[in-house]
Length: 382
Ligand code: SF4
Image (cartoon, rainbow, N blue to C red; front, side, top):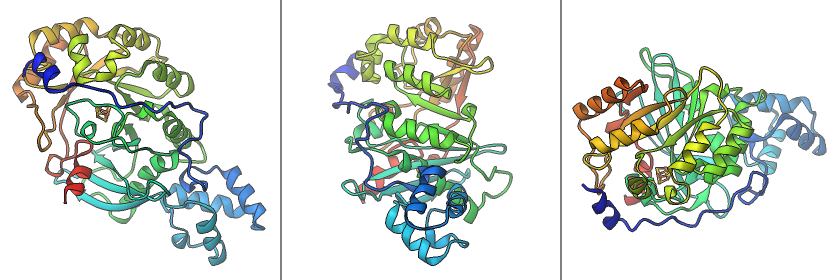
């Protein structure tokens, strides 16, 4: 498939991006959401309702274990359980479907519970390994961008998730791991979070910033910044704000280091071309041991040619960045073919020979279609 074919096949457009600022409250639900309420907020709410403040800590402890249904909070009196259900949106998500892969990967389909967007669905994936458990979470229903190789990109943008809905994905998976632990040597807890599911996280700064604050908080899951990665297609001003506010790991969906081709594969490149992205990455704040990950899905005869390799070598700053080569996860009707395993490994070796750290990401959960957007589309088709 040639670059020209790509441009002709997809008259690539960007859906209107919602204007998003960290302070606006556009997509907030009417009630506070239990997954992200702070201890002080909950204490104040209980006090106003004539309830003892110490109950707030008990409720937060249940919440942090993944228990969001007040009826399951054993040390909370019945009257208070009823109050919680009235005053808070305790369970912002409903589990619709769960799929288990033979390699231990679990994929979840959730429906939103909030007025106006009730029933809209998002996906999350748990990827267990021996020493870590990574959860890949969604930040939008559909996506505001139209990356043509991505299944989510083929689905209409429907809503930004709230911070509570983003954190609720993590808590629901925590709860699932408690009721059905991993078998064998696979790690049985959540150690890492990646914002790589459905949606462009930085087009939903309200939800993503709020969720990061909650996940990093000592009152919440107390995750380390080093264990959270936000992946973006390259929204330059938003990347700068992310670096200023949260020193989490950054991943860029690069997929081409040639502007003309990247304009097609990652349409946001038309707004923020590679030169601007390069400059922004050079200034992104990082600790000494850390690096920025450049994600690169290898597509047969699209972005895996010699000229693509050379452009990538020229683009990467080996001191601060590493390249993650990703096997294309095909979906029904997808017009692309992934590069062969041999070609991927040759591509990686060529990068390594130039002093660039490059890894080939093994595709997980292929038997349950674990690439983002696939379970939702499959369920919607039924
Ligand atoms: S790759 Fe990411 S930004 Fe692009 S359409 Fe898919 S979900 Fe959206």
